[in-house]
Length: 176
Image 1 (cartoon, rainbow, N blue to C red):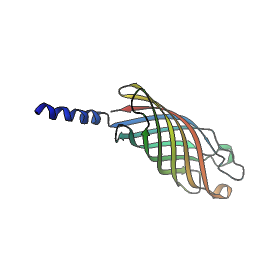
Image 2: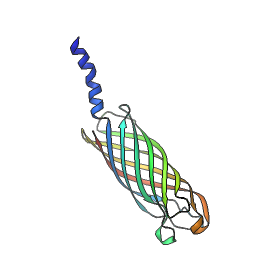
Image 3: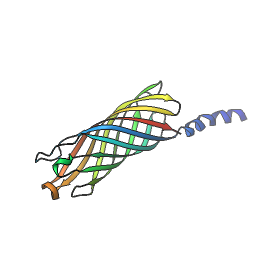
């Protein structure tokens, strides 16, 4: 009977050893034109870091920190955003080497070169995770990232704008 107790604890120990994750992400984004006066959007690089944990075999909860431009520098605005989002990810098929997933997140954005310095941020995403080895996954993600109530009033006389960015992101997930 004593050996049965040890067998029951083994899956918990295995889950605990793979519970924490660290993500490194690099991608490309295309924001919509955020200024009604004709300001152009800026094709932008997206850089992100994430830390999280697996809640179950199929679900993951994490904090994603990322940065991106939201208006082209030649429009006298040159606005950038840094965001922190709590994201929930659900893997549609956790078995095998290729794992499709969907998810959503909500959080906060810190803005540079806008009238307001903060905004509500959210995202929805889908992608594929490829297992490289037991501790490292490669991810490809398509994401819609939104910033709400962005204010350009001091610069071009506009406020309460929503900035949407369509992004393609590749990343590595390290599992500890």
